[in-house]
Amino acid sequence: MPNQTFTTYDGLGRAVVVTSAKNGVTVSQTMNIYHGDRITTVPPSGGVVKTTVSDQLGRDKEIQEYHVRPMVTTPTDTFTGTFTLTGGTATVSG
Image (tube, rainbow, N blue to C red):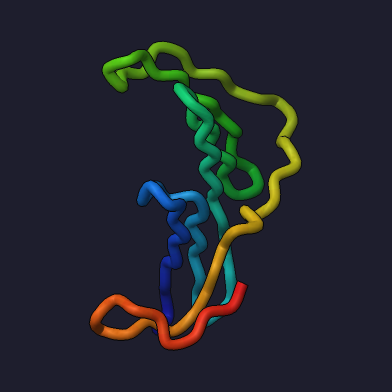
């Protein structure tokens, strides 16, 4: 496949890492950090890091842009493995 997108989800089904690849090589990665009423999006290099604060109904009420990129690492509880058609796991590594 020439172009692929890989998405890692948290336990609530929210996208936390979205990686774009071309011919098997990563070309960009976007990370979303969820914390209560806010979501911080860290785009690929050159993009603006933004935090969106929402009200109780999920409407955006504030957007904060950062001039300096934060240091962010992939969550430590990310697991990969082989999954069966019935939803069970055949092998898992973490």
